[in-house]
Amino acid sequence: MSHRNARTTFHGRLLMVHRYQAGWPKAHIAKAMGVSRKCVHTWISRFETEGEDGLHDRSSRPHTSPSRVRPSVENQIVAWRKRHRCGPDEIAAKLGMCPRTVSVACHEDGTSVT
Image 1 (cartoon, rainbow, N blue to C red):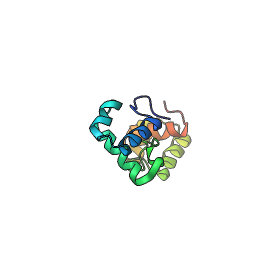
Image 2: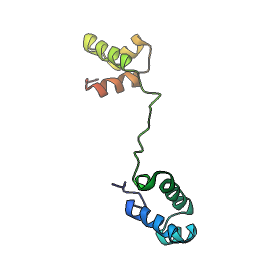
Image 3: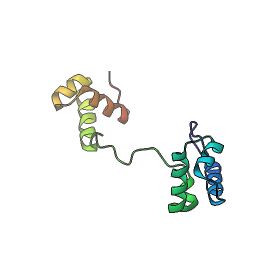
């Protein structure tokens, strides 16, 4: 399933590859498909390295989130919130972190923050 802003679908990408294999220049394929030459080059390169599987949509989700709060810290925040029933500003001051970090951790846990 393509995202709503995608100019091409799997079948459109496959059509690009078939046209390239039939001898069309990349610039002509790009013009016919309404995309850039770079886009055509990207899909043809993926097809050459991965086959048809390379023409499917890929997730845009990041592989890692290095700035994410560690689970042990999230557990500490939530435990403090449940034990002391204080707000993010007070918890942040006690634990030495940003109040927004406390709010995000509580929200992700489903713990109400007032």
